[in-house]
Amino acid sequence: MAQPLFRAYLAVSADGFIARSDGSVDWLHDYDPVEFGYNDFYAGLGHIVMGRSSYEQARAFGPDWHYAGKPCTVVTSQALADLPPGVRTHGSDFAALAHELRSGAQGDVWLFGGAQLWAGFLSANAVDRFELYVIPHMIGEGMPLFPPGRRDLRLELLDVATLSRGVIRQVYRPL
Image 1 (cartoon, rainbow, N blue to C red):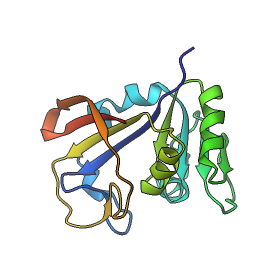
Image 2: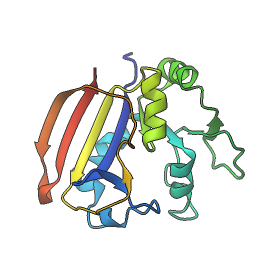
Image 3: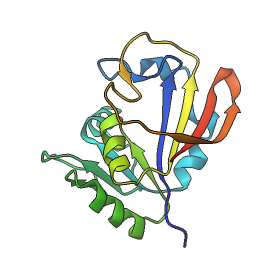
Image 4: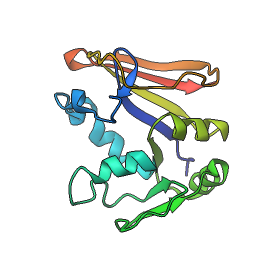
């Protein structure tokens, strides 16, 4: 069995933001991720890793856990109450978590979060793909894909495609 890929899979505005300053992604509501291959991506997942803020936002989607049936780890230093079935917490030892998931995940690992989560896994040499869906919408300000002061990171372009409605899919591998 092949080792799972650790994939940062996300939408980004045309001006480089992943969310508004308050965390809102309302600018994505007109873009159904299913239209851009989300179901195939999700079917290939064996595990989801979230930062705490992303987890809290996902819990706000409604009373039911949106990712039921997929094991999920929330990287946090704080205790979380009322975790849904299949969800656990883990501290910020990214190298240990990556090692555990590389040997145990039954499919790819979705790094569902923001810059802090990706930076932690990058420092552990555990990001295999950045899959960016550039949405033709400029939001002006918000949470950047990577904040100022980030480390220098060279990428190799693996694929680029123009999708419907002007969305561009870019797939990179960190070098």
